[in-house]
Image (cartoon, rainbow, N blue to C red; front, side, top):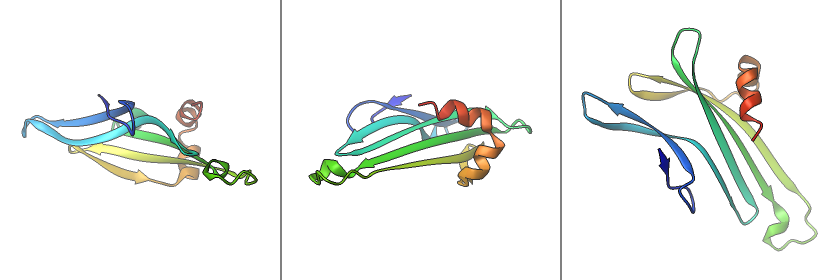
Length: 118
């Protein structure tokens, strides 16, 4: 579903619906783009099944901060961060499998390449 982001409805949210409870039991933001006052945050995700047919979510997060925006004209530093996260959907829950970006890039190079294009 498209849901509220920081300023506009820009977030794509995954919702886990439990038939027994007849309700949404968990939500997970899959993608969004946001920028304000020199800070930029972009993240996107891919939902896929691993070799054991388990539903997985791989998320790519890119963040940037431009120091010049806060009135420091001579500060030309622009910091950038790239991170990958791997999650597993099981028993109507989303669990963190890994936050080790290096390992995720090695294990899922094709998915990483697609996600990092944005």
